[in-house]
Image (tube, rainbow, N blue to C red; front, side, top):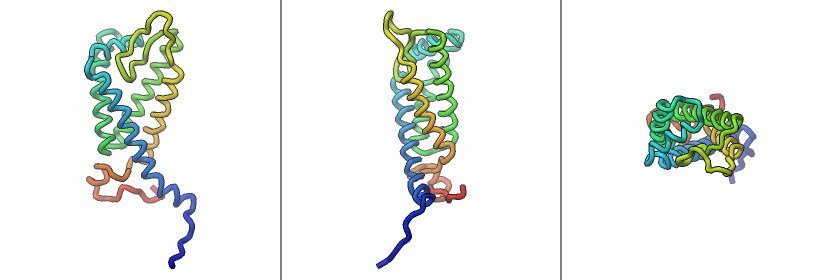
Length: 174
């Protein structure tokens, strides 16, 4: 019969952290893949959604709107594979900060728009109320996932780990 000492708090965290990273990575990947896929079929609508924020000139907004679904899909694929995870998390965090700032700006300026995060977006119909607070809270939650991956990007079952030839679980001092 073997007797083992109970795990310390640090030991439990070291055992759980990599798997929380997998959940964060796959969750954020799913968000980007769904968001990008929902817009890639109608790039003009995506451009109109960006233009509805009224912060960029129309021509710039349409280009940003047309490019955004492809950026989201690329981030989703990279995170799904666990490839360039820290870079993908950093770009994700930057985009999410821009999204939160854009939604807060629209709210502060009294615009009545759909954020366009998971669809075409744009101006809301007369009398339809925007849902800015839930959108901001949702994006802040996604930002927490990206922040976790910025700090602890190495996760089990990732291309990053396979390419480095090192175990995906870091030592506690890292």
